[in-house]
Length: 418
Image 1: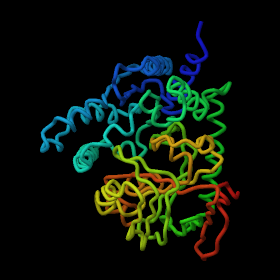
Image 2: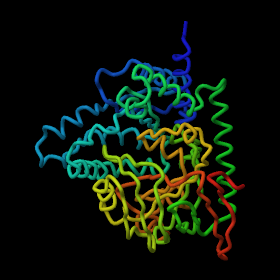
Image 3: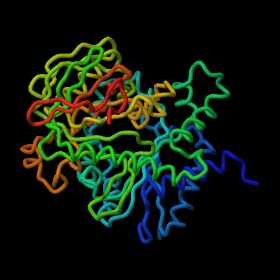
Image 4: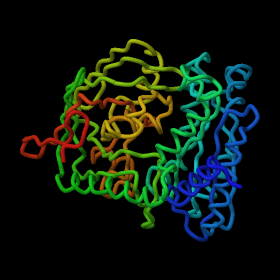
């Protein structure tokens, strides 16, 4: 007899395949799993197996899996030669491109300890990150350009649960994490697929409203935040319910609560304060405020994690400019939990946020087809990084500024004003 947990795990797999990828008959599925391997947790093995079954039932002719062990990453930092951190496995990109160039589907499953590298040399972590991003560039265009139907999701492991729920008895932490993920991802509802359709329809209507308004800029006002961020002229608001260049609907993030857009990289002026810690490279960056002038970060105040924040800002020229603005109501189910997940996939859906670095090409009319130079000229930002940080709360107001300079309410006290 199938127990309740296994049934929910089955539904989670169906949501990943049918809502996330929207896998089509004849599409192969490549699953990239990244987790801390201290004996792969049985629940994780079950999830991958159920995703595999759901993919075959959706008509996939082949399902392939690449397993990456986070523990070996740690061993590399502890024991590898210090001059070897620009090494990169070319076979991985070749395997990825084999699927992406063919038009197959991609799924990435994260089950990591976010603080595994916190005691390692931040310079080496930064170098390895830059090397991976540079080598991944040929594959990134398929993902960021909405050419393929891809999805990212997470599954809890003990190390992650211990970090998120330190005040919960240890033997209960993993179960609570699974329960929260099932709830956040609408898996515990009677018909999760229909629940996702309804949710994506609501987000789509929000986008349609904002696209009809064609605001020139957004004005943010709240504790520690007073900033105006310009929007690219031919911007397009998008939501978790996306469409690839072949016209296929898919949902890139499970969960998702946001609608997002492309800022003009040269039009951000004012100060903005983070309302949640930012987990980056194993380090928590806490209580920080950035000052922008003409689109560029010109001032930084940070209570903890300054070295990690400077690593982000100094990655390249584009890292000091914005690549995304995203709106999330304070009433989102992730926000209401009040947890810090140390995982951007979850934390960014708890709060309105902005991102330093690479602009989202799909949020610009014709963006996926543009050269880097054309994207730059249209207001888009090019960078090797894309780092979201959370600025929304129940005290944040956001106004849309039209071409004539008049303001209209978009959010009030963290909730939709329309």
